[in-house]
Image (cartoon, rainbow, N blue to C red; front, side, top):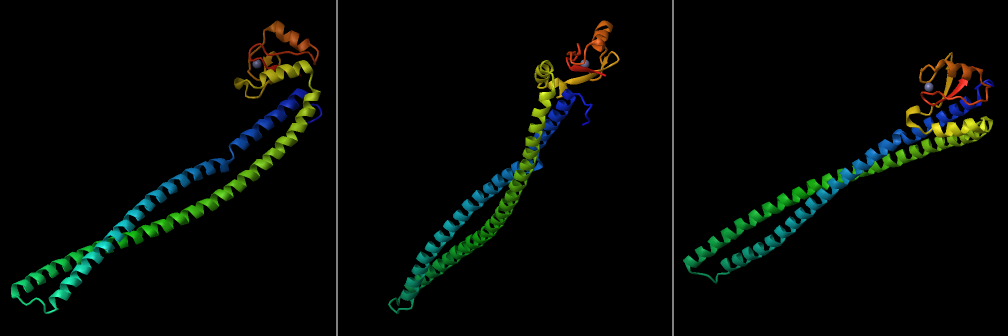
Amino acid sequence: MSEATPPILALQGLDLEDDAFRAERRDLPERAALEEAAREAQRIEGERTDATSRRAALSEEEARCEALAAEVGARAKELETLLYSGQVTVARELEALQEELAGVRSQLEDIEGEQLVAMEGGEAVDGELRGIEGAEQELAGRRAELEKQLEAGEARIDGELARLAGLRDEARGQVEASWLGVYDRLRPLERLRGRVVGILEGDTCSACRTSLPVMEARRAREARAEERVQCPHCERLLLRT
Ligand SMILES: [Zn+2]
C-alpha cells in the first residue's frame, strides 16, 4: 500500500487479509479429507466387526463338525471291529450290523461335507479380513499424510496471521481513536462483510451507492479530514477525497 493510503483503509486491508487467512485455515481441504477418512475408518471398522463375527461362527461350526465326526467315526470303527471280529455269526445280526455301519458311514460323510463347507467359508472370510487389514493400513497411511499436510498448512497460515497481527497493531496506532471505536463496532456486523469504510464520491457512498441528503453531503465534504463522517444509510465510515 502506498504512503497515501488513509490509515483506516490500510487497517481494513490488513483485517480483510486476516479474515481471508482465517477462512482459508478453517477450509483447508485436508480438514474435510480427514473427516471423510474418519468416516471411511468407521465403515471399515464395521466391516471388520461383521467379518470377525462371521469368522467366529464358521470356526465354531467347523469345531462342532470335527467333534461330531470324531464321535460318529468312533462308532463306525466299533461297528467295523465287531463286524469283522467273528463274534457275530447269525446272518440276521450281521445284516443288521452292516446296515447300521452303512448308515453311520453315510452320516460321517454328511458331517465331513458340512465341515468342508465351514472350512472353505472360513478361508474366504480370512481372505476378506486380510483385505480389510490392507485397507486399514492404507487408510492409516493416508490419514497420517493428511495430518502432516494439515499441520503444515496451519503452521503456514499461523505464520501469516502472526505477521499480520504485528502490522495491524501498527496500523491501528495510525487511526484516529474515535474512528477506531466505530470501526471496531462495525467490523463484526455480518451485513458489512468486513468492509466498513466507504468513500464519499460526490454525494454518494461508494460502498452502498446511496446518495446522502444534499446538506449532509456538503457538510461531509467540507468537514476536516479527521472529522468522523458516516453514511446515514449503511453506517460505514466515509472517507472524503
Ligand atoms: Zn453507505
